[in-house]
Image 1: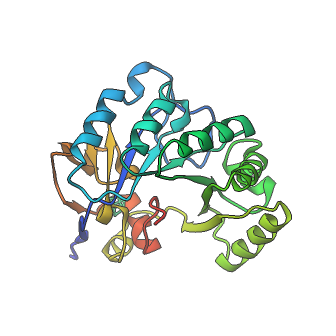
Image 2: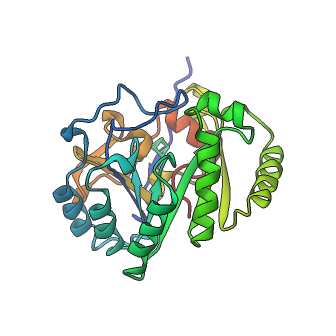
Length: 274
Ligand code: SF4
């Protein structure tokens, strides 16, 4: 009988801090979302400002490059702007959003917030296909148009963005790059990288025994209202819990979940953009 031995990943350095602004609040319902629903809008489902202050304070000895504001949808947090300002005082911030709140007025405001200090705001948007219809089947209706329109405005305001493609349709990477790049050209979208990740494979013995050279848990940790977790995939999942505070948390993770199989298949970080 063969025994499946999951790889153990060790944190090299805490460069990326993923703050889960809300575990359940989202204004959309994408069928391909990895988060376990039902969604809700109760106060207890949002991280508190005090918790964010505490983790920023506890991270002062770490070599942080970027704080990622994640969710469900981080921009549904009622104190989003205050938390963003707090985080920008510590380091660069990446907003991981479904784009539906990104209109001209909001983006102009975010530029002003960025200009208050010397750190940068980045954006991480998502899509599943370069074709509008195919994309919207997996994401929310109108998602493709909203994402392209947002990238266009972000580019005009000189923000840097990453469009993450979860390759749900198993398309050839070259095909995705070519089609998206011509779309970007047509819409005058600049300062936008494309990052493709494989769709989620299951955690079988073969997938899990592969060792990825780079995973999010090697350079980051995810913070939620309830504690510290290995990465955003495993936020609030007991299998990914590594501690209760940033003062004291485990640096090793046993990669044994379906999500870990996705990391093995990708061979690269999925959430961190640097
Ligand atoms: S899912 Fe999380 S814990 Fe598992 S390998 Fe990927 S980054 Fe590490």
